[in-house]
Amino acid sequence: MATQELTKAERTRRFIIETAAPIFNKKGFAGTSLSDVTEAAGLTKGSIYGNFKNKDELAMQVFDYNVNLVEQAFIDQMAGAKTSIEKLMGYPLAYRKLFNTFMDNGGCPLINTLVEADDTHEKLLKKALDIIAHWKETIAGIVEKGIVRGEIRRGVNPERIAELLITLFEGGGILSKAAGDRSYFLTSLDHVESIIQSLDVNYIA
Image 1 (tube, rainbow, N blue to C red):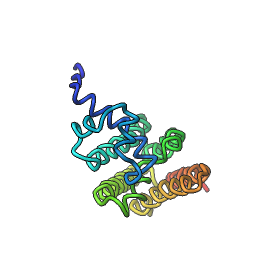
Image 2 (image 1 turned 120 degrees about the vertical axis):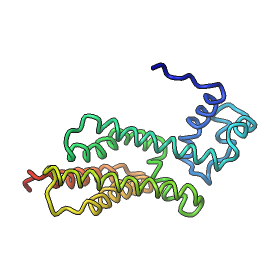
Image 3 (image 1 turned 45 degrees about the vertical axis):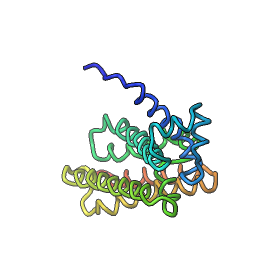
């Protein structure tokens, strides 16, 4: 089936979002002006307002775009996974592949939004928290299925495991960005991988 071509308006809208994405991610919602976007895109403010009602709408679309890139990386990494352990390992492996891109473009968009939007943008914060809740549910679901299949040892609390992994991902990312030191995030990924390995029913310490 042929892919439907985008209209000129849709292409312009996408171009604006793609151009604005790294700017918002580096400078944050409060620190990004429409002038930053117009200068980078080579467009007028009229072109921006012709496609987005205001900065808020653009920021929401940019957030969705940035997060979708991360989610797609997870999906791609897990595509060939056969067991629950392999699926869980898809998260840190995807993050390792995204790591340099993150650091060069201001960090993980989810982490950035959680930190900044806590004080500046209620709607963005809700979006970010909804994604965290969905992520927790997804990880817990993988763990539960692994227990049922006999791949993950019994006695494990799926929700607690999900919370722990997410905390390590996000906490390591926050510290790396704040300190300008990549080792925090890489160390957190090492711990995530060790925890996942320890869930394996055949794991021997």
